Image (cartoon, rainbow, N blue to C red):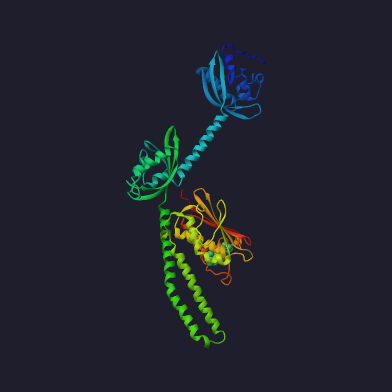
Length: 494
Ligand code: ADP
């Protein structure tokens, strides 16, 4: 010990139990008593601490500054300030110090604030990050309470041609025309949507908005619930979709134009082509015996070419006739569509001795002309004529591309996948190499010459178009030499 005088104060014992560091400092800045918490804080043991002077552990101020503070506190009676302590191992920690003068001694509490400072720093940093995100977002972000908009970002205000201040307190109805394009009152719909959000549902929908200059524009809104300082609020993320809608409308128009063009071209080409084909045939008949050398062969090629072109154009016309507008999507029994397709294919089915199996609980072989067992196939949202054509093309191909080495077997099945039915037409035919999986769905793309298999290469393009116009997808899985499975999804009807 250094012979330091230790004050006797009945509170000291209680103070020493504090979880904060505690020390009694004499007027010369020497520690005369301390607790275990201070020892933990500084890394010195209690005995070491009582040989130490404040400037030895205080890292922020110089010895002169500490002396000046002690003098100041002698007059003021105490102080509370932030400081930094150098621990025995040399590391620094941030502390908050609270000093009271009693009986000429400084009763000092020292609290470690390193952690709370770091937390505060992280909090500030994260707040700055989210603020930047909020402000630089490319979508309008609004915070809405029952009293109106509480806040919005710059983009949101710009989108509506208003200042941020003028939007605060406004209600969504003031940023919308009285009615939406479907005729419903905007206020009524807003109230419904907000009530749903407050019940915990999130929603995303298209909305018509009102700009400050009176013009209307389309937005996509995403609503979600947010509890803002105890107030139940709705957060709206609003995206201007005017451009997206314009492009979609432009695309739909140009698609319709293309469809119209393909239809008109294939339709109008039919007549002159019919003339070419029939006059070529007449020519071949009348010139027949007089033709010499290769002439007969040339004429045959010309007739054949004209016929081929006729079938291409006929199929192109069939393809062009399938338009979105021509489809009527209603609950349709897929079994009936299958049945019609199989009746239409009865001749080729019989010719190659194909077995058609309906995969249900027990596989039933189809006998041409016989009605299929009910319950084997589901009801879907589809256009019946096109669904029949889809089955007919796929089953027709399954038979056409059979392997001569084994009798063809075609399996039809459907299994539920969420809100769609996944249909499969599987065969044990020649199969397709994976590199052609995409190509076969393109118009006029064939993997075989016309000498091998009849066809124009439009069947699968037509299937793809039909399925996609029903909002589904179609794919193939196949192993050459083993067989192929074509599957497609259609919306279920419950
Ligand atoms: P097409 O049968 O008139 O040639 P598709 O568009 O129906 O036209 O078929 C495109 C190509 O895909 C066919 O030429 C054939 O090579 C291949 N293909 C289609 N279905 C099958 C199948 N079930 N098995 C093997 N190959 C097939």
